[in-house]
Image (cartoon, rainbow, N blue to C red; front, top):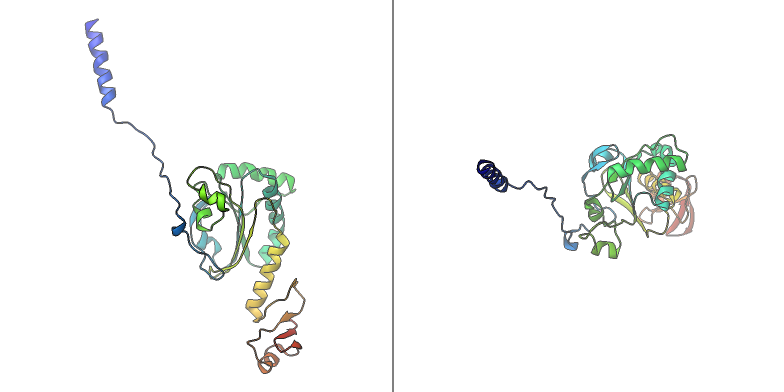
Length: 249
């Protein structure tokens, strides 16, 4: 008995001497002064993140294409489910314009994969084909300021839902448009497509587009272009005011 008790005591001492094996997770502290100030024509910040199609380097994903990066408050939420379904249905139209879509939610990829099944069912999609970023640590949400005022205050304190941010980015990786909706309002996917048409028309033809412009409608000659140069470049045009001249695209 004495031998057994001594042996047991020795084992207990050995166990106490074993180093503790614990998993330590790095906790990110978000500071407003470290957040990039993003504006139209700012270089879109690059990042690497896990997505529903694997790890993605954002700039490499864009390549020589345009891109739409848009965030969603959370998985399995009603408005987001309708939005992702609508964008997925319009993906062939974005493809025609050389635009890549990429979504984001501050939950994990495994959750996204389950959510996608609901999106496919509700929107009657054969297959959901663009990536959704799993921004569990909210690094991308911080980088692109995809939270509201209260959300920003809570970034360091647990789960924070993102708001509905939309960034349109061109092949040079510059931000060309920023639209931000509150979490309660669904986006207009047709408007995102329309804006891309307007941006691409302006880039290719050196024009600007009027209110509610749609492809095929007249465009505006910038005031920086003289009448003589406008005639050479565009041919016929209509002058409403010296600073307002319309022409065919």
